[in-house]
Image 1 (cartoon, one colour):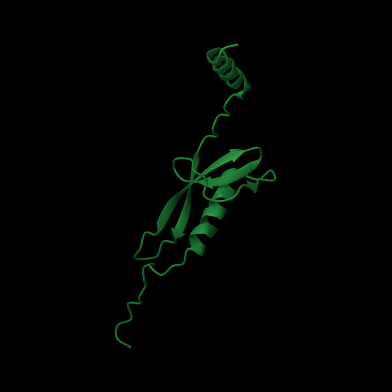
Image 2 (image 1 turned 30 degrees about the vertical axis):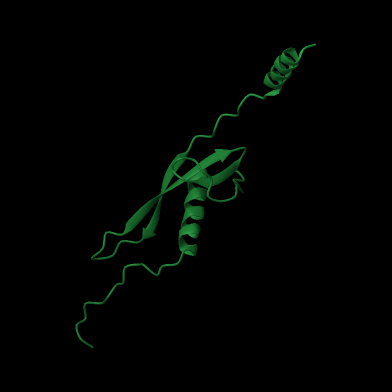
Length: 108
């Protein structure tokens, strides 16, 4: 057996060993209230992206790259769980750059 036929046989063996690629889960979207509306401010909402796979939900970027660890759904609504997770993640980031609300009571 020549070296060329050995290489060819090895390449064919590797090609057969590959498993079919698993399809990526569909990236879904929900919206989270970041700042509640007030009298002078309409508030703010932010999108949250997530995937559902094998009864687990994972927060992702808009391109489907995971942000956190998978969390079990336990039969609950995935959009609701994604909203809660996104709100917690956003809350953990701190609110240093938040908008400050001042009363309009004048000089005190």
